[in-house]
Length: 157
Image (cartoon, rainbow, N blue to C red; front, top):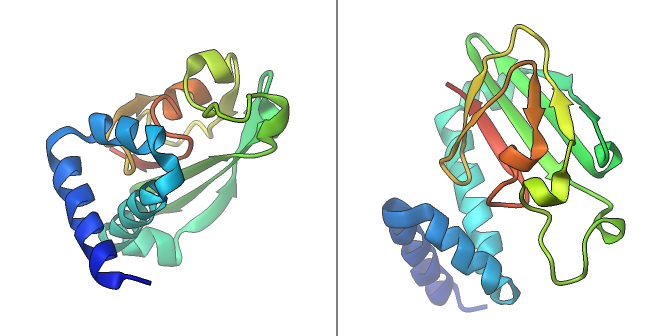
């Protein structure tokens, strides 16, 4: 393993994320075979965990229910601590919904699939992976949460 090369790639990813994260995400998805996308995702999630350590360590676990056409293709949960809530969303069982070289992203793919959110949860979220804002009203559209990247880590705002 070439750790020096990985450190260099991670530095490049972090720099590009600072200037135009959506362009970086698009590039990483287009070149996902080189595995930089995994490094990007790991770095983004670890950074969020560092910034919101209390929620990850002591937050209560709340499973979330998906509804709609692809409700069985989503797994999601929330963790809350104090005024902070984080929602993790990941797709599963994708072979029946998309072609081999497609990504499970966007409203076209997820159609009417949504997460039911408890009414006490906030309505504005920032995705720690893409930095995009997502809004909800006791329902969170999966196509919006996964509009740019195939998983999301939403932080309450």
